[in-house]
Amino acid sequence: RRHVVIKFIIVRLLLLHQNLGVKYFQILNCRPEALRQYYYSN
Image (cartoon, rainbow, N blue to C red; front, top):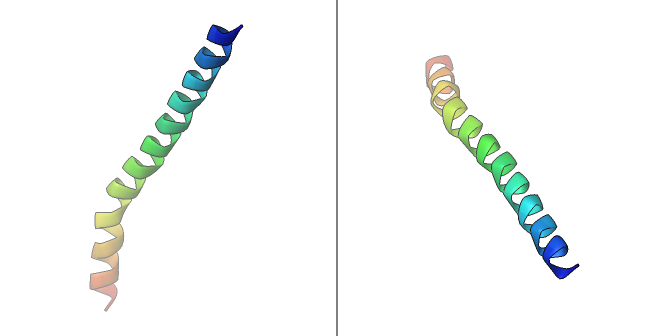
């Protein structure tokens, strides 16, 4: 029983970490374009 709980927690953490990583990666990818547009507009 305990192993199942630990495995479930690890899986949840991995999924959460993956989602955060994807969001962070998207932010990193979008930032240069956003900054460029911001600089060009001013």
